[in-house]
Length: 61
Image (cartoon, rainbow, N blue to C red; front, side, top):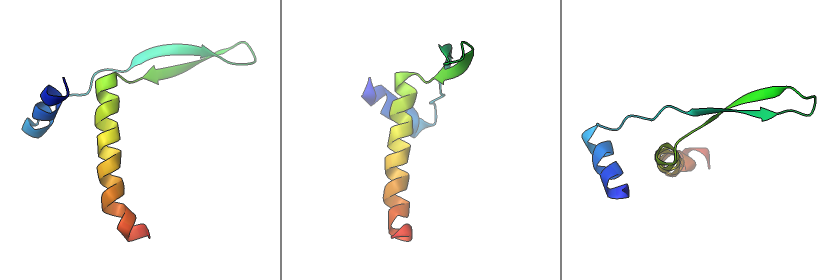
């Protein structure tokens, strides 16, 4: 699965999936909308964060 994701990212064929919408209850009884990303999208997001942190950490040190 990760190998397929890696290939799609390098080919430029990766498209993020639509977020799943859920509602979570608030203390006052109302509900708040929340978007939940798919696992594959979370993996891509974390990889981008790791790469950008490595690039820009030196600039902000």
